[in-house]
Image (cartoon, rainbow, N blue to C red; front, side, top):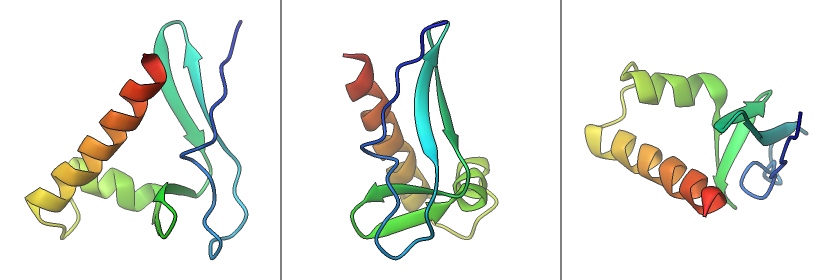
Length: 82
């Protein structure tokens, strides 16, 4: 089984604990695997549970904030497929 690993987006920020993370393409599906944090840019980290809460609408984030996170995630995944 071939796995393609990408870690550029999923890098721990300087202030976060060391994390392991990867994005793999398995049977044509993109799967994000990480243990604690995903980093959207150099200074913003978000925990896995926080990301799940944002996507499921359980957080107190505004709809606009939720949409921004989802758009950023979608843009990154799309860039890996091209």
